[in-house]
Image 1 (cartoon, one colour):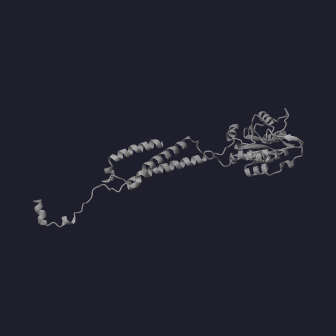
Image 2: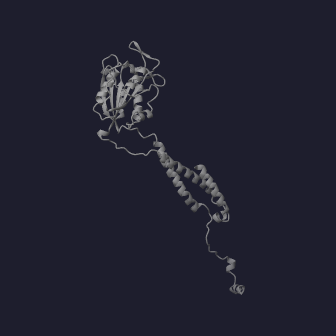
Image 3: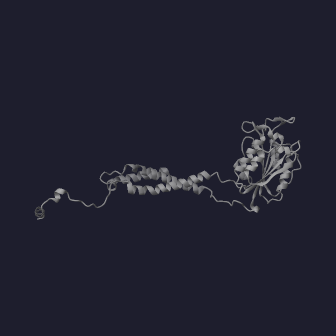
Length: 330
């Protein structure tokens, strides 16, 4: 668009040059600032065209109600592993971050992309058993405090981690909820899971994500054995739940995965936020420039003022005697 506008300005300048004396008077020159006008017109047209095209291609933005009715609420149900092995430091890019801290960051990265005005979060902690920690909160600070700061393992007796207990307790909480209203997220470093005994998935669960943390190759020594992320076990759990497994030890859960698993979670519409505002600004600025340039050219483009003028006789002409003036007429 900018190239086409510049070509049009070049053709227009050629035509103006032919009638420069009519437009600008005897000097055939406009004011010094006029050379900016073609650039301003072309730039304004290009900005306006880009802004309007970008707005046309964007999905329409609309405002959802702040507080949906109870029957329309979406839910995120989190089963969080709080076993002692989650305190081992082999997570993150440098493999020096505790697994629990990494799990907390991954969960918060998910919640940061979800509009919690439209969703509620429930957390179930599990180790040798399972206990609900919070039900139907919409405050991300509460979730962050639970997954980052609370010593949840103190609420359980020492022993072997039981992922099935966490799943069973989570499904029991979700049983009375509305059908297909809940996304289930399981976060763990893995455990041995029996081939039978997986609890039945309640109708409220639309889809599941199983998130693994911890190094899946090099383990850490704890309680007389090497502990590492049991990726195969977690993948098997995801398959039995009809969900998706994601190794989040060094990368967050992709937004596309969150959107694809169900379509129920109200994702924050901030991806195009900056581009939308930029397109609106470009359209406004470009349109303003296109409107003001012709006005500025008409008012301040040249010092020449065409039109009829009253010619005042010179002093020597005014002093001619009347008789001579009459003789001249004769």
